[in-house]
Amino acid sequence: MWKDIHILLLGEPKVGKTSLILSLVGEEFPEDVPDRVEEITIPGDVTPEKVPTHIVDFSEKEQGEYQLCEEIAKANVVCLVYDLADLTTLEKIKERWMPLIKDCSMHESMLPIILVGNKSDLISDSKMYEVIPIMNDFPEIETCIECSSKTLNNVSEMFFFAQKAVLYPTAPLYSPQDGD
Ligand code: GTP
Ligand code: MG
Image (cartoon, rainbow, N blue to C red; front, side, top):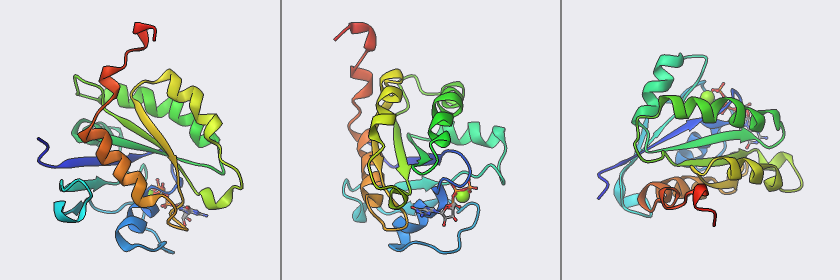
């Protein structure tokens, strides 16, 4: 059914969006990262779901609000990245990024979101409990994952979750108004 999938990475500056993309494609942590990488296409035959996948980076340094809105409108799924060692970046997901995505999204059905806590190498215990209230507030958040582009922990899983959110959406079936 899907010809290809567009995954967009968003989140506050320095949370590790570009590092995550480069870790996935290079299978090692990049020591020097540019602000932004060009769109990367992963051919269908090397993805678990056999669908060509485009991965799109965003950098506030290089791109403005207009471009941001354009990218959101093109995306099939957004990975919202925050820094596990700096939870103000998680606050911004709630206060800034979720409303912004809603404003720019052209989709009639919900644009699925994956919450990605990066830099898990810098913390000793999971911070998942911080994410649960945000997931409860926004049904379009499909799932959450903690990962590290430095150790590569859960990096390929994160992109797999994003693909799955597009191919097997669950959010539109769930309506908080239904009461169950
Ligand atoms: P902008 O392009 O400015 O929006 O930032 P970004 O979100 O693309 O972050 P970037 O990939 O440039 O990473 C920012 C800094 O965090 C760099 O110094 C990275 O080396 C570092 N970093 C990224 N991922 C990790 C990680 O998993 N663990 C640790 N310890 N550092 C990381
Ligand atoms: Mg970047």
